[in-house]
Amino acid sequence: MNVADIMTANPVTICQDRTLRDALGVMESSGCHHIPVTGSDGHVIGIISDRDCRIALNSPATPPEDWRNNNTAQNILVRRVMTPAPIVVEPDASADEAARLMLSHHISSLPVMRSETLIGIITTSDILSAFIRLSKNIPEEVEDISR
Image 1 (tube, helix red, strand yellow):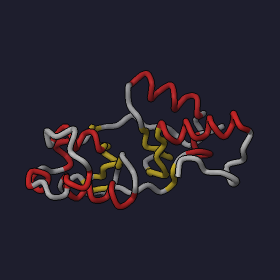
Image 2: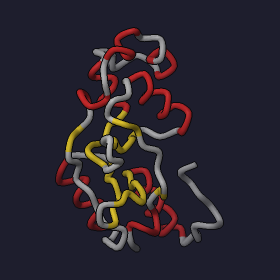
Image 3: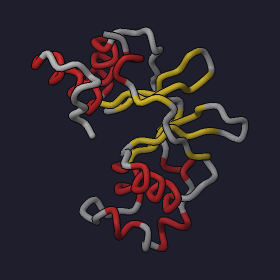
């Protein structure tokens, strides 16, 4: 099984010059916890997670619906909180390789790149869902456990 088989294609992105409030709003509306960050040229230059945002706001216990009302979230730019130069994976890499990268680097998502182009994102949830499907012999089109 390759990364392309289980990744989320065409993930939402956010520009480095947007605010944490914007990033949190995107995460909430799209139901994701990781967003690739783009520079002014549209290339991926980082990644930001909901955990990064909570730590930056000094409020790990604050529920997501309260983040949007945090004035600090309006004053911090994504580029100050993101992880720059994220570890990436190619779509034809094995799911095992993606899992190994995540485990060895203690991260929970990888942008999926074909050359310089972002084509997807793979998360630990994607890998776990694929594992569950495989262990139950359930075709992906029959049951999507992650959603």
